[in-house]
Image (tube, rainbow, N blue to C red; front, side):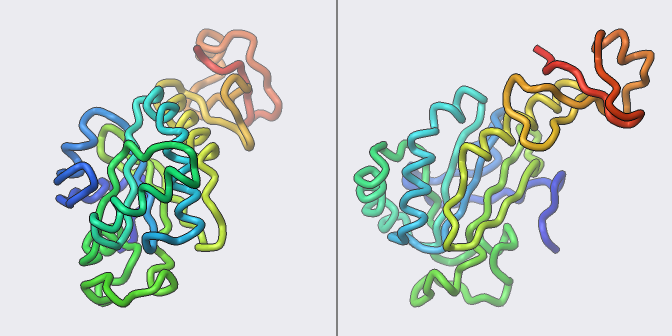
Length: 218
């Protein structure tokens, strides 16, 4: 069965460029962003990992840890990291999971259960579905999934934007509108009556009976 939002993110033990991790233990009380790659030394993925290396501090400011996954062995990742730094201009300080037996890719439903048990001899096209982003909360539940084609580089500024929205709406009874950015107006959820909205969000605007907006809560 495919993984859905609010499902518990499957736990696993794996080798990474920073040693063995137990995924849920590694997340701890943090948020986590797991993003996967179909193969090492692929051009689009090289630029993506470089982009995340530059943004890692921004994720950390939000209490989020980042971790990459590629179906090749960890030894390949360590060689690839040099290219990533050269292309992206930033050192890869976050772990990269090695998944040469395709166990994590299958566990996260990126590859079918009968899709073999080794990365050896497989091409990026064989592994095309292994290009998914998972945002996972401190409760170990999946908050977001986004899958990309191999020819489209991921927009990690968008993933930070979504993380900001998820964290804001987890604390306050609000939702964020289309194209929302930090500091923009937000939507009061239907769980808040007009009477309560007057107290919690004084001065809110009623655009439609079902659409009430207010300034972003502090």
